[in-house]
Image 1: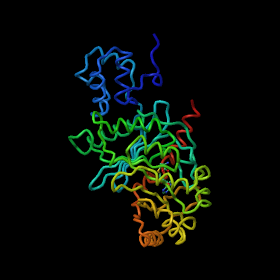
Image 2 (image 1 turned 60 degrees about the horizontal axis):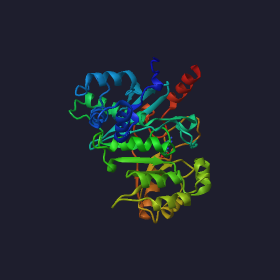
Image 3 (image 1 turned 180 degrees about the vertical axis):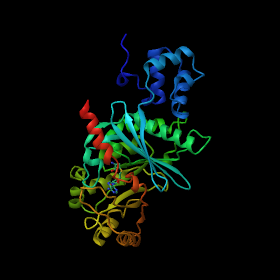
Length: 365
Ligand code: SAH
């Protein structure tokens, strides 16, 4: 019999509990409760060794160990920022590199999760965008980032819990809504009570504005929505974000107005401040108009240097002036603290080096 190659091994980590149960019952003749036991080991305790799943029968464990892959990613680089941020670089089974960013603060531990290798959206100011899309991550590769960082943080900080992370933001490499099915399966797993049991209140998915997919996100999940707006009118946005030529600002805002919001919830709008490009007083006033009838909160992101792209950050004074115009227009705005800049882990900086190395790896195959 053929030995399965890593790629062809059974991808149990990608399966929500119902799908895992169906598989084990139909193809393996196991009882449903065995699926639940296995799922709990994988997704609640983050166990990666079948050997240690001691309440499963030995024969079942051996069979799983022979066919199943539960470690689709390994950490191959860990960089620590002076501000406590940690950037983890993972290598996939096919040698691709992705990054996740851990951001501890006084009241929460947040992980910024990647959903694709590279990105197809080609936003002009973003480093990840320069890579192009290499491939989608599987649901298993998405949840493995969370499991792996949970395990490491618990170990390092000497915590008894198997789930030290409190918040997840899908703001890493890739466009989450461009990989909707795998994102949705990953959310189902991450939010399951037999798994890590993250609350919808603590998960945010950020998008460039794929309008039809925003609708699906609202209909099929209950997580929070963030929109990378980054511009105050169509000409400007189409220049910066090619996606705007497909769905313009009016269509995007209409999708936001239709997005089902739970009581008191708001949509976060991210706005990267680019000096002399989108940071004028006029821009701020147009932004107030755009957001007039949307429950919104604006995160102003100081631009992080991405060499060669030709953009520069608005200064602190300019950012504060921009924020004040929004505040005067009754739009809640916050200047986002820059984290992990010293290790190129900040917004838009993911894949600086790893991207090029990933390409080199791909060429060597
Ligand atoms: N594709 C999704 C998820 C990535 S989020 C999305 O765009 O929403 C990454 C965020 O970083 C986006 O809001 C993007 O506008 C912002 N960004 C990209 N490059 C940046 C840079 N160099 N400095 C600051 N923010 C940047």
